[in-house]
Length: 585
Image (cartoon, rainbow, N blue to C red; front, side):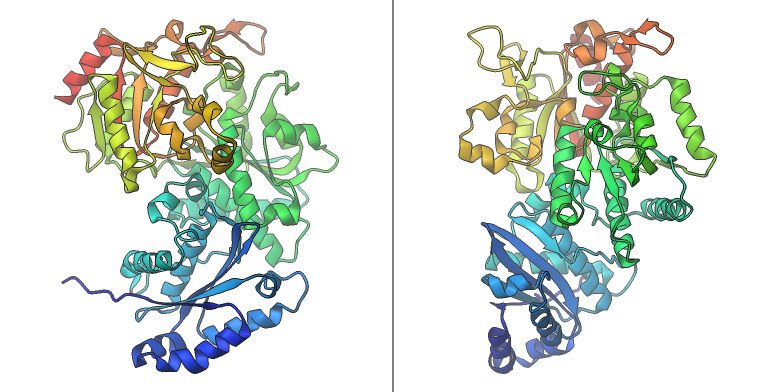
């Protein structure tokens, strides 16, 4: 029997003592008895908001006595340096949220989700009180999603700018990388082990400690990194250690932007300075004499293991370890994309063994991104890891795998998905088999953009359409990941744009470098335009080797594991296209 869940009670008032007094003494007594009971005697969730230079700052909380708690905030507003000072300085609002089923556990979970959502809103520059406290089993935990949806709908009616659509929030890169996600049991266990080992290393004055976490695409490495990084700061502050030095490193332009935004919204940048950085900058600006306490390295497989113009060393991981008391790395060998990131097997094994001897090696193996059953995941794994094309599963448990005859068909399908609110974050991507140079214009005067061209169908490569945007439009997309920008529905993304990010549905164009011959999938470096994948690599013994085939295979895996709900595939190679069509019968 389905329970009918009542609408929440949401009241918005001016955020000052006089308005609160008036609400308590005049407005509330005029409400019906049920509303009075819920607001006065039930736990409530509340939200303060005010504008700062056109953007919002917010504070989210929960209380068993909303009037006493709010007056405590007003009292704190008299103390210099408190966030509550803004309530006196700005035109602020107070939202009071109640529900007939609210108990302590449910209000804590609603508070957590509100904080998570608020941090992911573009118009919110800072969220105060970001200490999460997720609950486990309680009554009525099964009502959380419905009650929260009703709350959010009610808040949107009051202020659609501050409370945008849920789908736009859940599709945002900040939401997906947020440290406020409710962790799985495996993630939570790994986080506690990491924090415990870091604490012991710091207490004992140990240095150059390595914690190594292996995990394939979609196993929650980014969320674990983000959550552990933030939790380290929270616990240090709780223990009175405000001098802790943690840094989060990632060698990926899109991801570094997201992490910097998260650090800003958490208030970490304001308190501790630059806490998010690219590895080269970190290495060039730190010394062994003053090591940071903890260096968290997301996407550690993207670290350089060979010098280049901006990095004169030989191994970024070795350099980072020497500059930190504890280094925590998230690694996936199947996402290495360029020759300068290639790890010689024996060297990589040395790092794993270095971690294992202290019990510091963990493996994440549960697929959290793709909402697909095991048979579907096995089909994608067989294709991308082993070059084997299996028959498509008949029942994919709601996950869509569709083979397209023409690129136009794939384009139409993704355009449809992108126009729907709940699947708007859907984009086309392709293997790097067409010319592209971000620093140059196309050689031909007849071409304005670097494009992916298949017959008469063509679309610009990623970031080409930015050049046509007005200054105002460019300001509007500043800080957004490639797929979040509206114009990118008319572009084709590459691995260098989408690696590490989720899409609702992904349209994958397998270019000429992906072939099918004699019952096997082949990866052909001669057909690739990715110079960083097909050029020679000088090994430690001085020999030169090529890794084009394996790096293109990795590229295909990155692209084909982006879709949360489904994947559309078009293959340029005629034999592969026919084999895919046969596999779908």
